[in-house]
Image 1 (cartoon, rainbow, N blue to C red):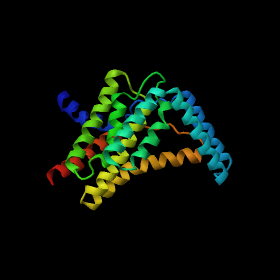
Image 2 (image 1 turned 90 degrees about the horizontal axis):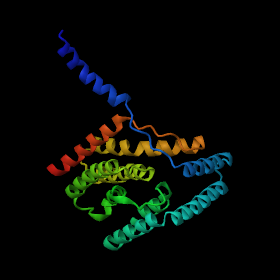
Image 3 (image 1 turned 45 degrees about the vertical axis):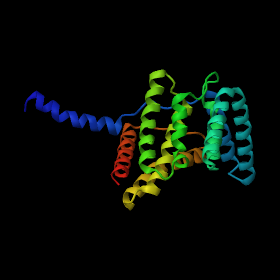
Image 4 (image 1 turned 180 degrees about the vertical axis):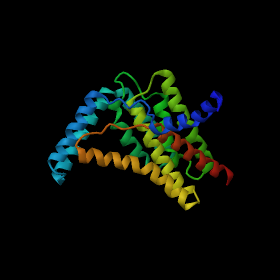
Amino acid sequence: MSRTGARARRGPLAFARRQLLGTREPVRRVPCSATFADEILQRLRDDRYTVRAWWAFWARSWAESVEAARLHSRAAGEVHALHAALFLGTGDPRAAISWAMAWTHVGLLPAERGLGVPNTLSLVRANLPIIAPSRPRLVAVVAVLTDLADGAIARASGGVTPFGAYADTLADVVFWMWFARRYEARAWLRRAAILFWLVPPVALTAAALVGGRMPVVPRPTIVRTLSAALQSTLTIRALRR
């Protein structure tokens, strides 16, 4: 066999190996936030997850979030403004869930910065189910475009943050689980999509609670590849209907 032929055969195998074994850069945790999260998770575990332990866990988490929002006043103000606009525009109380999740995690942003365009796009994507719930073609296309745009803008501007990494992931989970459940006609594809986006956050939460600390989140390239393929499949099927 010629060298050209050997290289051709190695090409697909090398690509498959990169997809299976390659990983993206891990999400860098904010040191003070990471220390606090590990501390309260360990305390919850040591107290054996009693009702009293859970109350203490939520009380300390809320107090820490309030302080973080005070120190990150610009980002917190932008979170308030964005979700006020969402609520006034839709009247949907589910916007409050997005607001609570975003506001309580602004400590994952640099103190001197606001949300920025990439994070705003992620939050918009997470709220597409309440912005245009009856227009599957439109919301699917917007979800794909915002997913592509937020990552590209963040990398180009040097604005990759732990907040953005988590917001981007949770936006995908929220939107695509809702979209598959509501608009995908094939039962097997609907179930596969829901499981694909549901299992990782459930597993991560369980690992954090059982281990008493936030685990290092693996980011294999194949997960992003499969996510893109599944998003494309759901979107193309919506456009063809």
